[in-house]
Image (cartoon, rainbow, N blue to C red; front, side, top):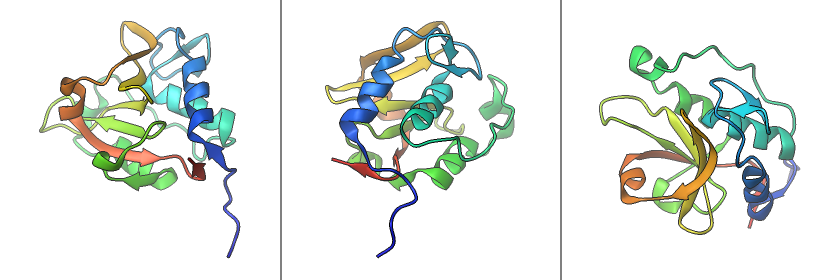
Length: 151
C-alpha cells in the first residue's frame, strides 16, 4: 500500500484553522489571514496551512465569473484536488459549494462546521461562522473532503 502524498489532517485541525480566519475582511481574490480573503481564499489559506503549497496557480476570476462562464469551474477545480463526496454525506470540516441560482454554476464555497454552521466569506462580510440554514442547504450543489482527512 503506497503512502498518501498528503499529510494526515484531522477535522478538528481543519475547523480550528478555518476559525482562525474569522474576522479577516472580505477581499475579492485575496487569501491572507487577517488581511483579506474571499470564500475561495479562505479554503486556499486553510489548504496552505495544513496541506502545503497550493496545487495550481489561481486563475483570474471576476465577481460575476459564474454568470458569464456558465461552466462548473469551481467544482471542476475542487475535484482535481479534493475528494468528491455526496453533499448528504458531508461532515464537519468538509467543503461545500453553493449555487445561488438553479440555472447557474456553483460559485460560493464554505466549510461545514461542527455545530450546524458554516465558515465562509462573502462580499460585504468578513470571514464568519454563520448558521447553515435551510436557505444554504437548498443551494448546496457539491461537497468535498480535504485529502488525507482523518476523523
